[in-house]
Image 1 (cartoon, rainbow, N blue to C red):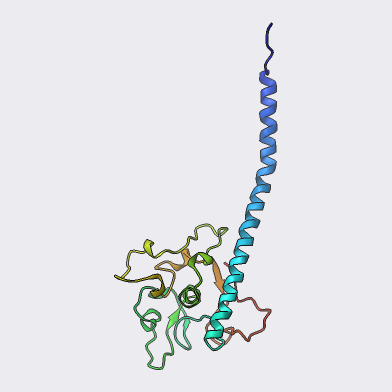
Image 2 (cartoon, rainbow, N blue to C red):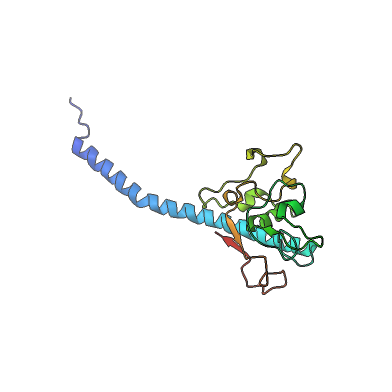
Length: 186
């Protein structure tokens, strides 16, 4: 008795059906994956927002603003400096002036509000990785993550979020309009 198997045509039809189903399902799965990334990013931003309010509570209602009083935006800062005056280029005796970056403002939350660098990375933002001190080449002896003033030498590679410009006349405080966005995805 001769066994009958699949013919070549039947096999090709089955393969075509599987390929068609994969073509339909893969974009849907990619969309679900992106939605999951956005949910994680939203959760990170919510945590960052809460940490900003805790920071403001400790620092006279001021949201994290790196540099000195009346500092201006300019990046990047000297992330591995041994004090804030060197890190931000503050030269005036009264602590005014200096320059800072958006990422250095965020890093104050790592330094003073116990937020991990991982919280500043959105998985949907390709090319952004969690900052780790071990990846830096110019680390002074005995230097720890809490001693840093920014997310390393290339901070833009380690932070997925943007911040309402904290410098100048329009800087937000914790008593600003509650409906205003403070931080967002880049």
